Image (cartoon, rainbow, N blue to C red; front, side, top):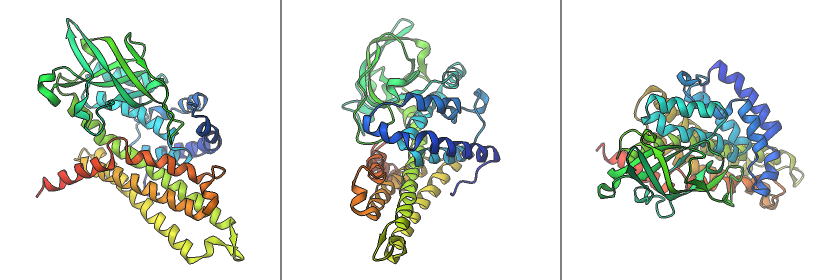
Length: 379
């Protein structure tokens, strides 16, 4: 593994490995079939404080570096990508506040997470996916309050979140410069969530609509200044993309692990199929791509920890890792042959889980635009 981690993280990594092996990996097979959100599993993760890996040390966090967290996150993803996505998305829900919130807001979201809560980031709308600036949700100032109306969709953790960071239009005349960010706690009147999406993959993560119907929040719910919400959201995604690359890398690693194990057991023409050079080359290519993705993730996270620019590197990590997760999952199925196409074996799930990593946190087409703009802008 490319991640060089602290001694504290090494100890925690062993605990996470044990937990994932005993409490996540096999159990997720049934949840994958049912689509049920496995509350008991997450309760155990909360006991281990896995949900608060991205809480800064000054607000009660563990003091781990981003590289430390990446090693732990990938280990969770190897067991189940939906499980890792839920844990990561809680950190995503905090990011707008940590980027632009005041001290009171930062302390509040961190306290909610430490107490066992999850966060959710609400940007996407039915008519505003890749074009996130086209959102129709509004926030109208009314005295010392804002009144929100609109709908967000495909929101990870929406049905289980303790708080939501929400983009809403405060001044339509200003277009993208009229979008603001709000911190809204669960249970606020006028805020509701839709049914859990019946997804193709990452089925152990909760994904719902979030609906605002005359939802009144105090003016203190505004994160940063009015009109700064879109910029905050983009900075949030710049960070979040690397974490999606990390989870995608975990999917690819699981594909390699399963392919090697099966290749040693499967006998054809009188010998294990792994002894065929063609199969060995296939495994080697899978490893090359997975380790490259891991190094890209590590590089982007190192830049973040150093306070250096990372938008391009984060987009590269997410784009490449999402693409190779699909490739490696497909090759793992090929190693299994016909059995790989059966739900009796674990690898068909990997390709279902992998596909979303080419889509959310900005499609890989959008990532290529981000990368190109960064490169062309330097010429």
